[in-house]
Amino acid sequence: MEDALGRPQHAKAGGSHKPLAKESKDAYFRNLYTKAPDFKAIALLDPDFATVFGRDLNFNDPKAVANRHNYILWLKDLLDTTSYDEPGRKVVGLDIGTGASCIYPLLGCAQRPWSFVATDIDDKSLEWAKKNVKLNDLDGRIQLIGRKPDDALIPLEDLKMDSIDFTMTNPPFYESEEAMVKSAQEKSRPPFTACTGAKVEMVTQGGEVGFINRIFEESLVLRERVQWYTAMVGFLSSLTRIVDKLREHKIDNYAITEFHQGNKTRRWAIAWSFRPLRPAQSVARGTKAALSRGILPAVTEVLAYRMPLGGSVGGFAENLSNAIAALDLISWNWDKEKLEGIGRAVDKVWGRPWRRRKKREMELGTETEEKSKATEEQICAFGFKVSVRVSREHVSVEARWVEGHDETALESFRGFLKSASEKAAEDAKKGA
Image (cartoon, rainbow, N blue to C red; front, side, top):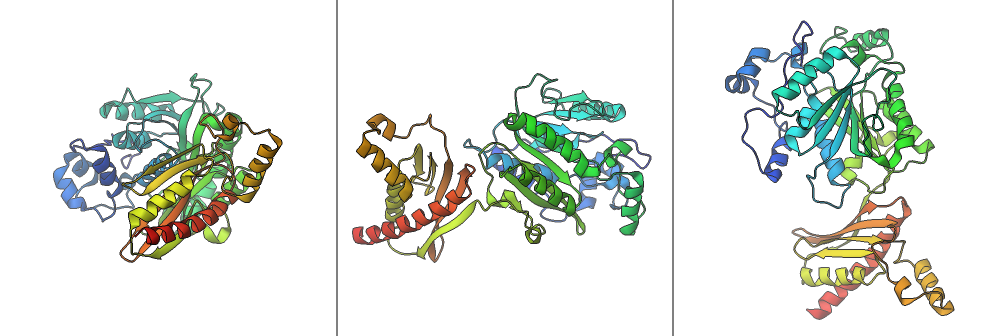
């Protein structure tokens, strides 16, 4: 945050709240802005807030720029749904162009046990960022690094780091100061209303697409050394151009979403990965605005079967789990309490081509007993999650694509699940 003269104000990420359990802490931050905040009440409770903002908040005042909290929430969902580990694991992120407030690392560290490398090319911004990190007692988790304009944006080699979990950036929007002024005039507001960034934070060669293209080119070299490359953009047209670039290079694992700030301001974010773990559908396809442009990534969640509620749901779920377990899988783990399971397969092992090939190998004697059994050492071509959901009227079977690059595998597996569910339902009725 900065005052009206452009002097950065100190940022406190955690406030004076008592420590929260992991579940309640995540829920607290997720619901932080579901209702309009009472700024007068906050001013009475927080002297620092009252000093900087006063009793009535004016969003045309540069001091009152809202934090991009939704970016952090989306990152949490992105990381949580692309891991077989429990949500909330420790990760390391890179904030490219952190700015004077260092707000993204502060917000991330306040919510999760994350660590950050935060970079910037502006010495004054880094000076204030270091003060904010120290003020929040996060020196041990946030490392601030000065960079030069022509340096690599993802400095893994310079920092001697093998890998990190994600990169994030809120890049300069505009190609020139003239473009920035023109954009402001078209929105019928003063050209620098609520723009507190230094020039290097607002203007760059090629605008935001040019900046993200630099990250993209570096990602083509680093590839799986970073799980997720992410960026925020200010224009939907930029999102379209970046997705075109991903598709040109046959990068099929990506996610896009939309952020709403207040009543009018919208931002978008994009992420791409060279690894096979795929995000949940709400994370990967989180914008309706992109639907008409045909840039959404592949569907990752489908309804496979639905039947009226009745009979033994437990018996039905057990029969379905057994049918999946009978497949030639690398692994299958079913949770009887949650009625859901995670499986991994080397191929479309439920399909006829697979069964024919296995039969042919057995007839030719090229299939040994050891070879016929899938093992954890084998490469997973399709990871999936199956859930049995119970409502007041229906029992549904849902499938989510968790791992892999073959888009056709989900629809093929859906067909198997439908047939297996129908048989499981019949057997459950007979058993009853």
